[in-house]
Length: 407
Image (cartoon, rainbow, N blue to C red):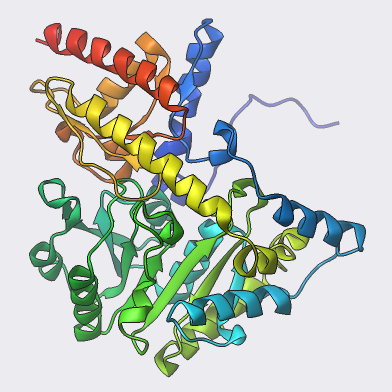
């Protein structure tokens, strides 16, 4: 029998210490608040189903029919032909002409991000990401030991990219330009002129564009065109999923579409090779993809109207709070207000104070790459408008008290 030893933790990989995902990390503090008996209002994760929006019935029927029909085994690594063909046909109809063999089904957009960055970026390489950014990009780069280079987006110009700043960041190690349009976490939508400038910039520096277009169908003025429609030959990899516009986030069913240019053939082969190692993305849900992208989408118009109404409530209420400003979102269900903080205070301190005092859980802007002293935080505004009005009244009361006693 082995003698007992002092309990010593076994070592873990150093890369784990570089990995951070604030959207989920902050939930531990929320659980502590709940343990003290306070109700927490979760505005940290963009899950429409959690706020009462329902997955369209024809998608549920397609997935359950697949289960009943016995489609419960492993699938081709790249995805079932019907799903890939449907995504390719949809992209082509929207102006990004591709064949099904350039579509790869993924476990949500998150896996698409992981596959693309691992295929395109070596240790020590650099990737241009917007600031603020969706934090999974920087988390994946940390595991690769690659370097994110943040290009500013400007709240005084509706959170549009600062192209002059972007041009200063390119080095010989730069490999990828990430665009998130419509944007998470700001709700911004980029005009065609900015989008063309981003494509021209990438072409000039021989960069692949990783275009995160998960929210393309949730523009308040209607669906936002895919970036590749502006230049079919540009080296663009488009990412999307069933999670947001099709109201099925828990299904973890996403895809990436690799532009038709032969310059991306090696990248496509590399992503397929990496995908082989994880066997396949979830099976029965892939059988709902064709139903989603070729079937009834009337729920999207209803969803867009509901989001636009919530965005108005959000913008008006937050801009009425002294010291706070909020750019009106134009898509999706996020806003990123900013509070003018007292000297020495941080966005995380404010967000944690708000949580502990009111039970309202948001995510601090520094978790998205913003400077901690700028007082930014992200709000998910999926709750009912009446509930949002109550939440914003509580934020206003807390903020007044916070600023009065922060000195």
